[in-house]
Image 1 (tube, rainbow, N blue to C red):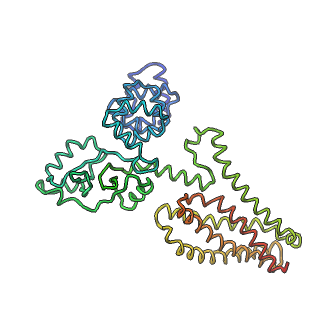
Image 2 (image 1 turned 30 degrees about the vertical axis):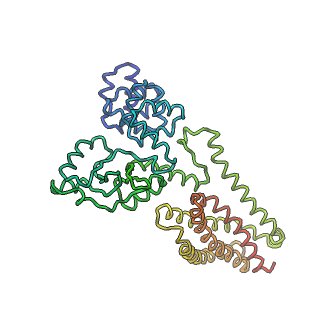
Image 3 (image 1 turned 30 degrees about the horizontal axis):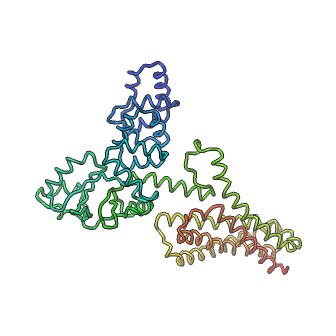
Amino acid sequence: MLEKLVLKIEKLIEKKQFFEIKKLLPRDPEDIVELISSLSKSTYKLFIFRMIPQALATDVFESLPIEEQEELLSSLTSQEIKTILNQMSPDERTELFEELPAKLVKKFLNFLSPDKRRIAIEILNYPENSVGRELTPDFVQLTEDMNVKQALEHIRKVGVKRETIYQCYVLDKQKRLKGVVSLKNLVLADPEAKVSQLMSPKVVKINVFADKEKAVDLFKKYDLIALPVVDRENKLLGIVTFDDLVDVLEKEATEDFERISAVLPVEKPYIEAGFFSLVWKRSFWLIVLVVLESISGLVMQKYGNTIQSWVALSFFVPILIGTGGNAGTQSAVLIIRSLALGEIKAKDFLKIIWRESILGLFIGAILALVGMIRVFFQQPNWLLSIAVGVSIGVTIFISAIIGASLPIIFKKLKVDPALMSGPLITTIIDVIGIFIYFEIAKLFLGL
């Protein structure tokens, strides 16, 4: 459906049948965004954007990918840019400014009205990963001495320009946060009742310098519509709504996925990322892993005489290191996920290690038995089978403990736990597993 619409509109643009194009344009901003993003030429995108009704233009611009926003800004007139920037929400405008060159940001800041410029500069001065970068000062504020009738009149007056009206924040004369009251409670209450009687003084809030991920955790924990952002003196600076943090969630999930796959974070979409940038991002960890994996070769070299005595030992090295790596990755992924969801904390370290050691013991025993039977069918020697089986069991036991402990240790050291998973865990287990294997083999085979 979209492809047909795009082809039709592009043909109409070429034929300059502008009235027909206007009739085909979607009414919903998100549908218009999808249409503009699908057009094949920058000139077509600019043309369609200029045909959008003024009332929708800012909503459409805010929803476009950052790259396309930059593309449009390079083609629009100064007046058009000025109108859009002044109508954008502070958080969306901040996100755009973060991606633009400093010279361009300085130029665009001058396009803003004095109040909006002050807010933009203030937000940009907060640390990059802080909640302050996502806040918007467009919230409904009430005072304790207002009655319900006055509060509702105030909401009707200012509500159109606010990010949300479902939660209203009660402030004192020093702008300190005193409580929160829902629109539902105000609508259903007696018109003469005081706001102070209806508000809840227990407000879930966050400091402006807190990490964005902490805000995400609070939204998930308390099922919030909006989260008030305060300074050290409890003065309300703004709010963060959940849709403001959706991009944060997506970015964090993408970075974790990349790190789990041993790839440095790629800032741009795959198709748009530079070739040599991808080469570097993907090769960095592979180089690290090659260096680490070479240690396993040194370990095997150390046991060269053992291998010469029992050549069959080398047949089962892949089974051992593959099973150990898989077991370690399983533990690591489960722990990383639980840390990300807030299900476990670093303080639960001993409890987790105890649990994983018991699990590793049982899983190791099962796999040891399977390994013994498998080896015996290939090399019918019970001593060799038992040596390989016990090695698999011990390796899985140790792998489960290492896989669970390293992400928690990284978290405690304030390093992303996602680094300790996938290829890196497998490489570490390979080295340890080979050492365990040959030591147990020497013990059982009398070498």
